[in-house]
Amino acid sequence: MHIGLIGLGRMGGNMYKRLTEAGIKVTGYDRNPDVSDVASIEELVAAVPSPRIIWVMVPSGEITRSTVEEVGNHLDSGDLVIDGGNSRFSDDFKHAELLAAKGVEYLDCGVSGGVWGLKNGYGLMVGGDAKNVERAMPIFDALRPEGPRDEGFVHAGEIGAGHYAKMVHNGIEYGLMQAYAEGYELLAAKDIVKDVPGSFKAWTRGTVVRSWLLDLLVKGLEEDPGFGKISGYVDDSGEGRWTIEEAIANAVPAPVMTAALYARFTSRQDDSPAMKAVAALRNQFGGHAVHAAKAADAGPSSGTGSTQE
Image 1 (cartoon, rainbow, N blue to C red):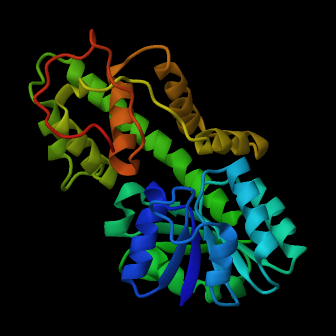
Image 2: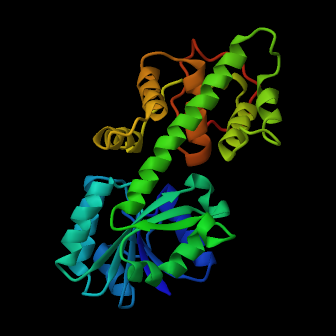
Image 3: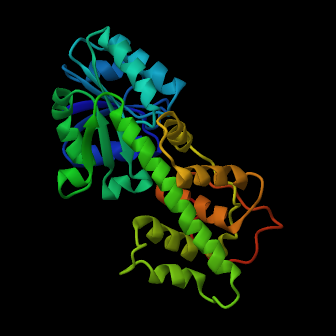
């Protein structure tokens, strides 16, 4: 199999490597010529044999829309485009309609795994026609984690369903991270607790709150005890907001996810220990940027690891 991949950044570059290691030939295009195989999207399309599969892995919004439009202008009827970025599910309807006018097929794929995906594989949530999912299954099998397919991959439903599932996944992620972070702040505030990192590490086996996120929080604490190197300012990528909007639209109560999103807004006003923990977690699993602590806030720290997740 030979596919095209547009976008070779933090996620796309690792996906390129994982696909190649699985025996799938990939021609990649990126605006950065240092990592690109070809000089343009037109050259990319020309390099991939027909019927083509082109995976788009660029930032959501206008960049994705314009990329889908541009690649569609060079594709033929029967080709397939997969949007693996963090697009809002409602954008998938527009992308599919745009490509359908040219006879080009479309799938949306929510991708989870962050900077660890190259090693561990990616959780994949796909929306679209079953025949297109089956056609692209060798790609999905190469990207997903080892083990049973249904533990790392789902054909969630119709077009938009993949990104909708990923949106809800990220909303849940917000709530989980916030709970760990508040627990961290409470432990750190109590004078009788002398080993906060050790307390979290003791939960990583045998307890009901063990998880990969907990493992990453322990890693972050070991690298930077007290999170003295980073501020408590926490960004949000958009999917948390979209989740709450959908909860409102469907009259589904979502108090935990809503509170977690609002806590991120609060973090932009106050530098709290809990939000430092959330910032560190986002850095650990996704490589998301962190904001450096102000000189007055950065106390002594024995951590020697990077603050980037």
